[in-house]
Image (cartoon, rainbow, N blue to C red; front, side, top):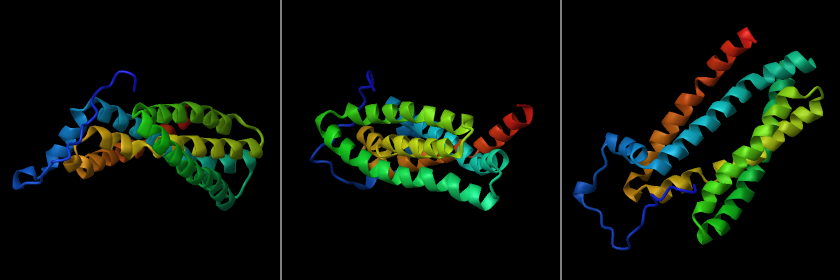
Length: 194
């Protein structure tokens, strides 16, 4: 956020033409030749890895450590994080729209701040001996990761020309969820050796 200077400048007179057709590889090229887009994609993939990992394993963790039924553990592990993420996205989106119009870098700062503040809540989830603190961890992570979520596509679109927005979003989503799909396997392997 401090050094990247690859913001896409929109021109008022951009015209569509037949030669502006976007190929399959153009979305990959748009992402991987733009440093900010690479960092946003890496951040998104990292967040999805963590999110998928803890959403997959949290019901088991609650079942094993708090003697909850699997249905109660599944409900508790999803309720707090998603309710607070919904509130967080709405508040973060509003704040980002106000701050981002003054200085575009603020959107990336919000993403970084959100992930930095969210990280200790994951530690709280995993190290708490009381259920209330696990729920606080779930809620805190959900709320603060929303600062990243609310700005993901806007930051990407600020550095990618409009004709590549859809393709670049598709590539970012593919990389993010492809990486996230590995989380249950990786964390399951780690659990066997822990």
